[in-house]
Image (cartoon, rainbow, N blue to C red; front, side):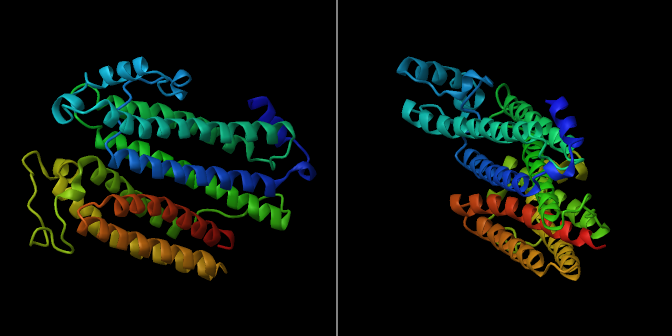
Length: 349
């Protein structure tokens, strides 16, 4: 595979097909957004620990007989989640949560194939623009790493806990969003190449994009903490938290520990850091507009505004399933909008 990729980088520019490569990468990006959505469903339905083994190949098939289903259910009944929280669950109820975790893993496999097979085709045909094969190889490797991290996350909930570590959940979710960012950025590079036939793409990350990206990353990490700690359920009020602006937190192990482990503190930080992110992303949108891409600025404004409203709605509804799911999906779309704006801002800076 590496030899094919290096050959593609040595290929004449005339053989490159950046428009086709861009279309392929946009399709991968859409699959990643779907993956984020299914991951949200898996989390909201508490399905993530229903499959207690990692079988990258044979696990692509679900149980095909009642005996196989009983075997899987027996394995699930051995873990703390069942023993402490799900005693008395029926086989039919187990099949429901098993489906979402199986589908989540299956979609991960399909994304891997949707990336790897076209990449090999474009490389063999020497249609990848010069200089981009190493980046695409790195993305393929990150996709494989994401599968490993997903299983690493699941293992944290199989022995002593009744759920997965919120730290590992944050790594898993944010690596997916980092891959999404890189896929979208590369697709945008391909679009510029297709339009200009330029040998290189001048877009780079300007300071406001670095700052906005870092601030957004913090918000996304704490969003994962909120999900992992069920911190969205500590209150259904906004802007107050059970009658007060600032909640009391368990700081017995220090404020630093409380900031990342206490559900009240995590919820408080996530709800107000959102407005720091809002300011940063509005400034990024203005930079994109100054660079001549008014559409990117509009989409970023819409995405961040809708995301904040969905966050408030999720809290006030007591983490209603559809509000919470939309909040996670729009979070992924916000990442795309921010990447698009950052790419535009860097093209003429």
